Length: 532
Image (tube, rainbow, N blue to C red; front, side, top):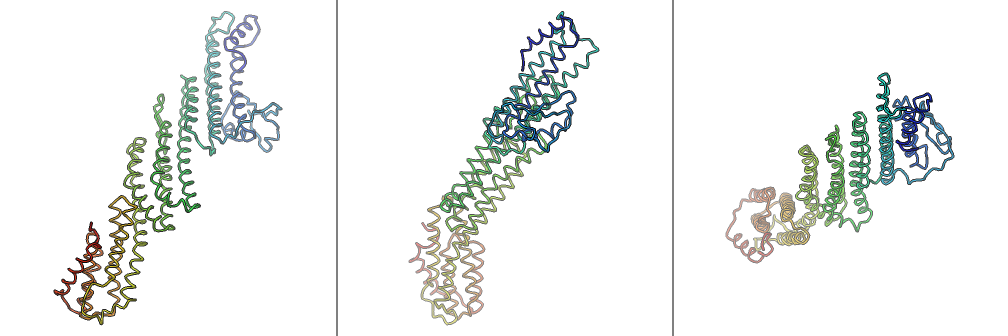
């Protein structure tokens, strides 16, 4: 800006004392206003290697606003930069051979923040300059006596002076909005906190201008909202990137399946920490991003996307992974429900209050469904080989219930069931530290085993008296083996099997069966589930 305000005031006073005609003070004020507008456009366009991109962003915004008292001069390296783009008045495009500073692309976080900082400093300084000139003009300091007051007939200039400030602030707002629009920058929160501070400094320069203050309030909310949304998008991208790398590298799949709760906790907590300063209520306007209509819902939708990435990842692991991968996936889902989500929701509550309760329930239900589905998948994986052995030993090895001899011992398939179930329990005890999850898995496998035993008894061709006694003995031994892991559904399956044998060949438990069962219990007690 040419000159200092005091020097300009003195120059206008000297011209007035010389008796020259004209309102030199007002001309000075309008020239400074023109300079402010042009300077902001110059700063904005200097951040583009392709100036047409800068102008294109501003074109529609400027044409939609009525700047009746100013002509904009946008300098470009070549008139061909704007080929095909025409501007309505009052915008004039002037070609120039002036050197243009090359900055990094405006799509970077650093360049956006630098632009906001530079244009904010320029406007704040220029507005202080303009305000001082206007104060001197309306107090008569630019007249030859230095004491004259502007006549009431010049009251229109008071209104015009306010319009000048509004126009400058309005262009400033448009420039920042255009810089933020459609930019997929990797947001650095510390840089944008500094950018917000720059806007606050401009706000201080327009104290007392209600319309300008409102424009800056709207800009601050938009700026904070853009940063918050960009930070949440970055968190989602970070989670998606890690998940994608796990599918590309199978050696990472097992690690990610077990580390997802820790990862989502880290990303979510980091994101919350970064966005919190931008959600704090503004000290002057007593408003924040969440006061804007629809902002809370939009932010929660962003959080929903963040929480959805682990769900999709773990579900894919469950569909395509091996048994151990599925197991770690279900453990991660269980950990999310029991530990991670309550902790993260407590942090979210400090931000949103009680308005997010439905969101919490929705996310918790989805993770609970995921945990249930993965548990079922793992149960089926572990139960299938056990069920295959039962069928092989009962059918392929020639157990003939219809021509069975007098029972001498419990059939070997019961012992094999006990051994296989104990092996699963041992595997779970190595990898899982949550007894409730282990119990749920074992009960699920036991139910599947009981269903298979029930099915095989029902497809048998028939039972003689000894076969019915043998089958009853086997079921009694199986109940003893299963012990505390027997589910209501499993018990029902075994009761149906015993009833079937009783109906086909009426028989009752006799002392021989009781004795055999007691001997079996004595010799195989160590295989009974739930025994320490």
